[in-house]
Amino acid sequence: MKKGGNFFKRIKVKETPKPIITNNNIDDIQIQIEGDINIFPDEEKQIMQGAKSLLEMGQADNIEEAIAVFAVQFRGLSFCEKKKTDDGKILIVLRETAQRDLTDNEDEVEKE
Image 1 (cartoon, rainbow, N blue to C red):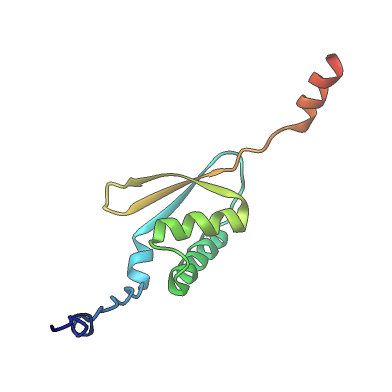
Image 2 (cartoon, rainbow, N blue to C red; image 1 turned 90 degrees about the vertical axis):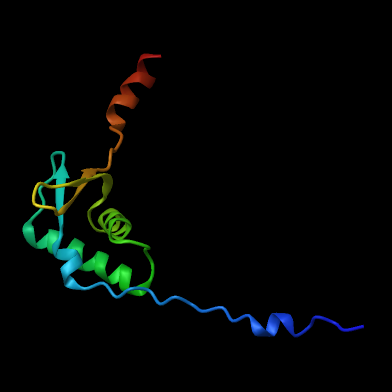
């Protein structure tokens, strides 16, 4: 009786290479910040470069995820939504991460 041990040796799994992100992909993306936070144009560039680095290191699957992760680490911004602009670019809206005001909570505790 023949054993089928050679069957699995014939199957080869090919690993698909990750696409290399070029500057053209990043140039098609704009960042918009919502909320009362001052952000400078050079900081937007730093967010984009940091997101590009995360993509190149394989720590993010796509540019939107990379921007969201890096914006949280860099300025405490959270991903809000993704829109398409009229000129075909992608607009990623970031929002200031909500932080609790502890003084209001302390007043409520004292009243009880």
